[in-house]
Image 1 (cartoon, rainbow, N blue to C red):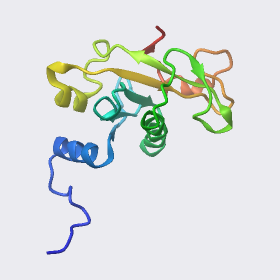
Image 2 (cartoon, rainbow, N blue to C red; image 1 turned 180 degrees about the vertical axis):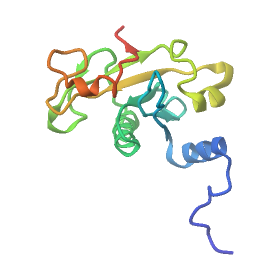
Image 3 (cartoon, rainbow, N blue to C red; image 1 turned 90 degrees about the vertical axis):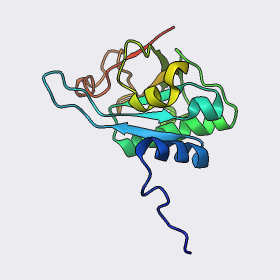
Amino acid sequence: MTDDVFPDRNMDHLDKIRWIIETQGWAAEPVAPVESAEPQPAYTYSVGFEESFAQPEVVVIGLRPVAARGLLGVVADQHRAGVVLPVGELFTGLLDGDLRCCLLRVDVDECAGMFPTLDHLAGDAGYRVQQFIWPDRHGILPWEDGYDERLRLAQPVVGHWD
């Protein structure tokens, strides 16, 4: 019998996510944008940070899935190394060029339905989420003067300062 290079080919979605977490520690769950009267940008969230690192899941809004997964991977690497990232504070060191970023606490009740895979996997146990806020190309964050207006719809801030 030969090893299948795609062992997850016939798994249902939740089993595939569980398998990825078991083999890699966490998974990235991309969500497509919604084109409607109230459009919603694409976003990607982690699944498995809580289980693997005892840290909240992280959502990245407004970036393509491959870029968001890269950022989530950087956050996962920090967690794996035992680094505690500040929440509700600006910090540097994760992004190239020492660009500032931050993590904000997300109220999952306010964002009901935004994280369906977490809803299914966590069940009644619940889960925590933080939003990773990334700057525009000039290093300006969404709440600062001069932020690229074209990005306001791409990266809505759903997280809260504590």
